[in-house]
Length: 150
Image 1 (cartoon, one colour):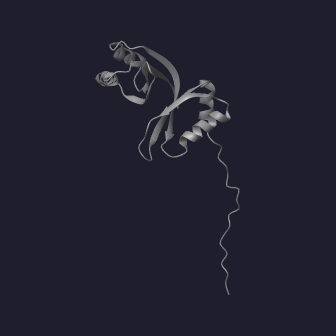
Image 2 (tube, helix red, strand yellow; image 1 turned 180 degrees about the horizontal axis):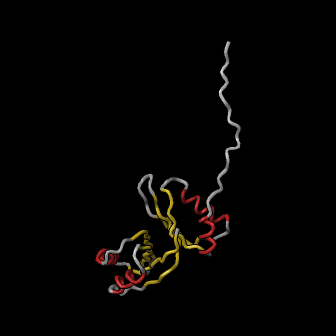
Image 3 (tube, helix red, strand yellow; image 1 turned 90 degrees about the horizontal axis):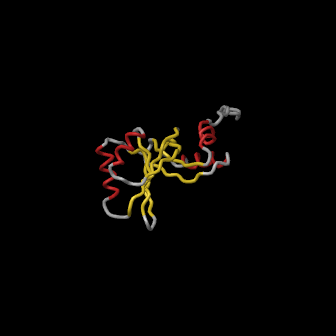
């Protein structure tokens, strides 16, 4: 898990603009780790987390002259299996940490996936998610099979 920058680009609702952004990132060799695109009646909001530094990203998209904001978010690596998202959300809920929004990548079956979380208290969330579940000893008495002889 790490604290990362999320970039929100505000795109007009017109054909080809998302492709233009994607081409610009490809040209700058910027790898997208996670993204989501949502729309409203006036514009679309493209939120993304990238593997490259802030300055490299800013320089790449500056040529497009698009309105942009930056936000701190948590990038959480999770197993790509049922219940992983529920585990993260459950831990945050138990600690009374509000999730403003979240989105996830898709991962390879049996592999890892990334979840991006915008939460009310980043520091508290990082502490909560870093904690590992305590290991419980097996308290059940082991039963040996009893073989009856005649």
